Image 1 (tube, rainbow, N blue to C red):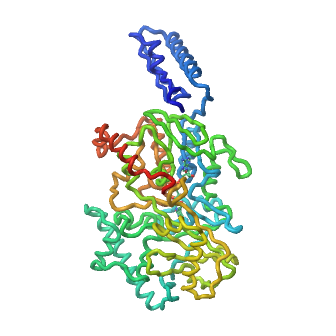
Image 2: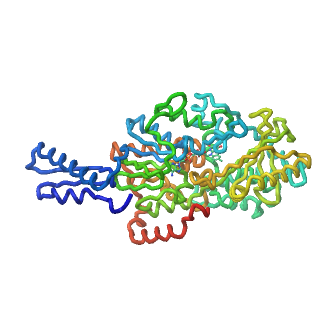
Image 3: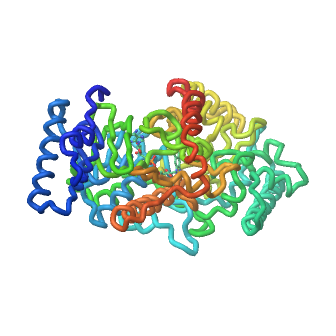
Length: 564
Ligand SMILES: Cc1cc2nc3c(=O)[nH]c(=O)nc-3n(C[C@H](O)[C@H](O)[C@H](O)COP(=O)(O)OP(=O)(O)OC[C@H]3O[C@@H](n4cnc5c(N)ncnc54)[C@H](O)[C@@H]3O)c2cc1C
């Protein structure tokens, strides 16, 4: 929007109408839609005259704007939701249920679902994003489970029972007694760290990372041999996508997902994809026909690149030039997107907000799918998952055979995380396949046939995600965490990364959609709007310093997209 076209109606109109007895206030939210707030007050003014004033003001306002700008009036709504993943779609559902029906959902991709993202791999629907309903079979019911059951989603409880005994290294199968002994030690250490986490949560002790807890267990000796590292990886990195030296002990031990909902994981392998859960939620309030959403409130292929926000009112701009205006916006994009420069917020988000965004971690978790001409791995039920122990920690470590989910397809899935995931994303798939074949041949011998097909998702380089899911690092206390979700004027924030108990998970995104929508509804209808708490008021108070800091941060820490 060219700056010269800006017309601030309040200035213009106030110039025309300002009188001693008339207190008239107009606010112009943006250049091409006038969000008018008129207070025409006068003890002596009759209601007819007041109406007249309002009408004249509105006419004048729109005439001035039309003269100044020759563009369509963009869509108006009460709430704009940016992003149609689990959290955005569920926030929309909540708003509509509570009577706020004039919403607009802007989604960058050609479909909804976000990181619940299925992919056609040689005619088979695989999940490049979320795969499991994590945390079932416990005291509380995981909120995703009833939805999955209602739509008949196909899944199986994963059998991890024997994983730590199915260990290979560079010389082949590791003798069961060696693997068992190491597995026992690592499991004891894992239980110790969990107990320490519980104790520290009940105390005023400051947080430590998981690695520190491991040192406490073993008098500073931490997993170091290939087998120890691989089994440690299985317990930690395979869940959090980052190593124990990064992950907060207090915030992850015990992990609420499992302590609340149970320790089972249901592996989804449905031809409709795990995203069918999001579609089910969307269909409950967005018009649809033959399984396709036809509701004009959902706008696909809309990459938001600028958000102007004020105390009341937002103006959202997309790469295709379209502009949307509303009273509020809910931003549901991933933490990785917030950390990048894809969306330009005007004014800049405040320091306290950026600090929480930049301090929390967006981890990278990559499941690589492989199709072989035949199976060469163990197919008995106790060999569902197997482990490769390399001298390099995290080098193609956790494997799953998908025989039971996709019979006769000869599929394997191997998971890499963090640095290895980033590395693999940057290289051609043929190089990744060469590395994988080297690993498999050292595990199963030289006769292993080369895979016919490989699929390597690229979450880190995808500008719409910039990683897989958030991980709670050492150094983020609960008030810094709260700031991730805290609203800024008319902007509200949701997404898995804003769920204090269940960050990183589908159910976290689901629940946060409701939490954020409720917060906004409270503000809209009860005037109970969240205010900055005292912890960051001091920072906000020093506006000049803050602006300087922000400038520095923008200049120094935001990496250009291409270089990431
Ligand atoms: C590889 C992987 C494995 C996972 N495994 C599991 C698992 O097994 N179990 C589990 O519970 N969880 C898992 N997760 C995490 C789970 O997928 C997420 O927590 C959840 O789906 C996040 O939902 P969300 O709504 O917060 O964000 P998203 O799904 O990221 O939704 C945000 C939406 O915003 C859109 N968007 C981004 N930028 C813009 C823009 N500028 N303009 C407009 N739209 C934009 C995106 O396209 C996206 O649709 C996994 C994730 C990944 C990536």
